[in-house]
Image (cartoon, rainbow over all chains, first blue to last red; front, top):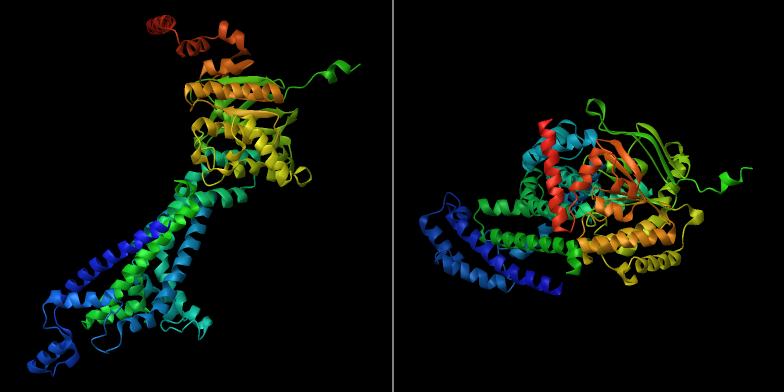
Length: 313
Length: 287
């Protein structure tokens, strides 16, 4: 297990380098440059050139990337071209928002998806058929569209939950939760339906197994069969799907944060991209890459906990 | 004056004119129709027939896992459909099952010890075993089926098919059942392992006075273990009687063809049988 973790950490360095190269050169293809954005429309070509020199933008691309990478490997992600703030500070200030959003929606996806899938497998009938259709619809609806729809319906028309705004958990847990209900709903809808569908399929597979028939013939209570045997055995394939949806919700969070105007990493990276704030975009990119690696590692470790076959070999 | 009657041990299982349906509504289809037989206590009844003949369906109905459309199943003299819900569980303890596929019959996420102990936890509070009693019985039964007692700490993936089937037998024995329904218990095993598991079943029956309903499509296996045999075809009984008689003087044409279809380990005999099958088929065609 220790070797698995060490291997993953080594791999993560390689992945961070690759993803940062991709971000760096893709950003260089975007028309316009930060000097022009900073100085605005009134800038003279002369002043723009001076600022470019100050920012190091006149250097060749490879040199620019090289100096960034050297800094990054030492833990220094540079500073924002605009505000001059440390990128690390900027990111850390916004992590709680995105973390709340993704953590809550992962909980909702895992709990609700598992419960719905299990229930429809055991009860079958109408719920199962509804789930089959809804899971397709849930897959097809992009989270930003659901987000806009929720704002229009629930927040603006019905005025049940606030449309925008974020409160830190430490300041006011009640308003923190209230403000996150709609974003989390928008972000988790797709995941809930996929996990529920996966759970339903694997639970039905498990229910047809002979060990379940033996327990039924012996007279073991159905609730105990479902909770002790069906849930545990069908959780394995669902766990993989939960992992994938968590990683996917990172992209979803970028859109959802923008719709609900949440001050998270998603809004930070969109603002930075439109204003060519390269160090910030790279910093968030590195952070997202690390997040994906950590989630995958966590899923692999959980797999070992749930599956004795993995543990034994 | 009633002495001779009360001394006689009643049949453990009596099946009277049993009918079982598959499906509901318009798709309803009768899978078993008018099947009657009985199993004397401590004996083995072999239920044979080709796939789809209703063997497994009959077994499941006896276990109470399929609704009975008509007829009666008497277990220890009591109609199982008339037994109140509360007592059904106690019934589950006295009537156990062993399935064909040893890979699907054990929960891969549970230790063998857990799997063996689980049936004990459903017993009524009064006669529930203590943890120590369960552990003791586990160790005893694992040894009895030819495994080491420390198998209890391991997982199903660490055992071969034959070993798993032994574990399934041990699980069936945990609650000291009177009747075990064996649904093709050796069909998924290698020939040499088949013999071991069959011999184990025969020994256990002799030592514990078990009654067995042995379901199989393999007549040589059934003959090895059964006292009497019921031959099913399309959900109905075509022939029944003592094992020796059904084998040596099959009365029904279908039984004869089933017997002729089973391979024998003697090339000359096998050739003769093949010729016999061929001749019969020609006769059927020319008719």
